Image: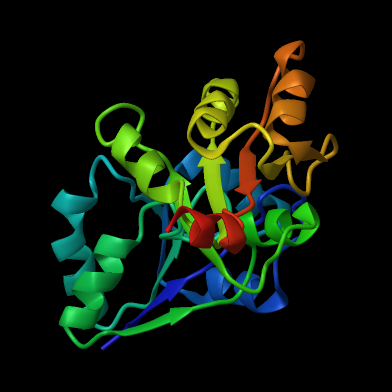
Amino acid sequence: MGKLYLVPTPIGNLEDISFRAIRILKEVDLILAEDTRKTGILLKHYEIDNRVYPHHKFNEHKTVRGIVNQIQSGQNIALVSDAGTPAISDPGYLLVKYCVDNDIEVDCLPGATAFVPALVNSGLPNDRFCFEGFLPPKKGRKKKLTDLSTESRTIIFYESPYRLLKSLEDFKHYFGGEREASVSREISKIHEETVRGSLDEIIEHYSSKTIKGEIVIIVSGKPKKKIEKEK
């Protein structure tokens, strides 16, 4: 019986990878990659010459059984996403579930995940938080935001640069423009930035800018005093 390794990869700077992760990627029999071209850049940088096979949301349901069979036959396989930890808003959950259901050992290495530095950099409470990832673009979005409007914990969202302003406007509508928030962009890259303030202030900041890069939005929870008052 082989083993499945989930290997976090850098979210920006290529140096943000562990010695253990590099060793595992060199030693396994096969690397599963969300985008083989992007992963190829990382592998070339660290002189890792190994087999790479695509594993993404468009083919995972078709290939997962075959991958499990390979591991059961004795192969060790590593799964990586384009950036960060596999299965966090990326492919990975389905394969892990199949492995667990088939008594295959799964080892997730610690490593980069975009929301952790964004949360810490936000300056907002991080002792209790909820991770929402990407909001539904249409169906279910209104209900999700209505439910979150009374959430007292700090809330974490992922967003694309093309929908950032729309999401910030939606947050203002459901949470109130005075709600404190933080937007982290291009984490661990050359043009990394974090913008903090009320939702009104952040909307004003980005309204006149061209927005690029991967984005994490941190929104403070609803103050408990307001929740108690409304009850």
